[in-house]
Each structure stands twice: as C-alpha cells, then as structure tokens.
Amino acid sequence: MIQYMTHSNIQDCIKRVKAGDFRAFSHIVSDYQQMVFTVALKIANNREDAEDITQEVFIKAFKSLDSFKEESEFSTWLYRIAYNTTLSELRKRKIAFSSFDDFSTLKEEEIDENREDIATEEKILYLEKALKTLPAEDALLITMFYLDNQSVEEISRISNLSQANVKVKLHRIRKKLAIEINKLMAAA
Image 1 (cartoon, rainbow, N blue to C red):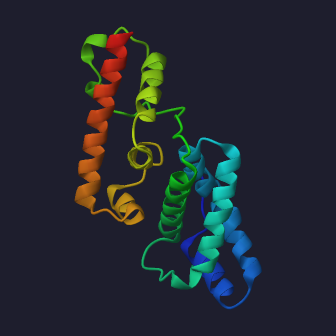
Image 2 (cartoon, rainbow, N blue to C red):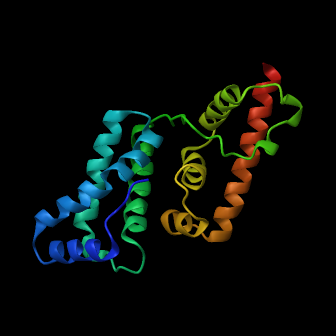
C-alpha cells in the first residue's frame, strides 16, 4: 500500500509553497503522482494520455493551491482535481474507457448463479467487457469504491455527489454490470 506524507508534512509543504518556496511542490508531486496517474490511466487507457493528464492535474493543483482550505484531506482534494480533469479530458479527446485487470470484488451473487461452472478468470473477462459498456463516470465511481477502496463519503467529496446519490449510483451500476455479464455469459 502506498504511504503518503503525514498530515503535518503535507501541511508544511503547502505552507512552504504558499510562502514562495515552489520547490516544495516537488515533494507533493513525488508523493502523489502515482495516485493521479492511476486515475488518469484507468479512464484514458493510454499511457501517454495519462501522463499528459497527470501533468495537467499538477499544474491545476499548483495554480489553485491557495484555494485549498484544509477542510478535507489533501489527497481527497487532489483526487477531486484528478477526477474532474481526467473526465474533462475524456470528453475533449473522446478517449475510450479502459478495462481493468482485477475487479474480482464485485459481488459474486449478482452474477447468474446458474453459471457456477465458469472459471473466475473467465468471469473477470466478462466483467472487463461489461465495464467497457458503462459510461466513464459510472466506471470511475465503481472503480473508486472497489479498486481504490474509497469510502462513500470520500467519493461524495471527490465527485460532488451526495452520499445518498453515490450509494444509489453504485447500486445501479452493480445491477447494470450484473445484467450485462449475464447477457455475455448467456451468449457464450
């Protein structure tokens, strides 16, 4: 698991940057670039695009660091910038949404129980295909919850949706995935 700077270290870096020590921002970039890159790559499904988007995220974060009020965790604030920037770039570039290597935490009972003979690897392949059918925002929400282990509260802050709306969307997305996976399995 990635360990980010402690709260006091990040506060110190932020204060130093706000005071004009712009080199302190390099510590922030170094510590959080993998998180930002991962968000961008999951959506863009293209390493070069994800690298460009990551740079754009840090430029935006640097320019708006004065607006960071420290009411939330810095990582949540930065994740929100990454989320919004990546979706914005997705709309601009019409990037196809990526598939995921591991999504095995989706509730197994939501997939047709009559198909118990299908290997887990095959189920993951069906899941990857089903994920490609989702709108990028839906796929990112479910990714944040299952793969990034973000809480509903964190997703709410990042996506600017109410917690109730996040829960409803996650429920609906799981249902859509289950229906799509069952269709794919029935067609096989």
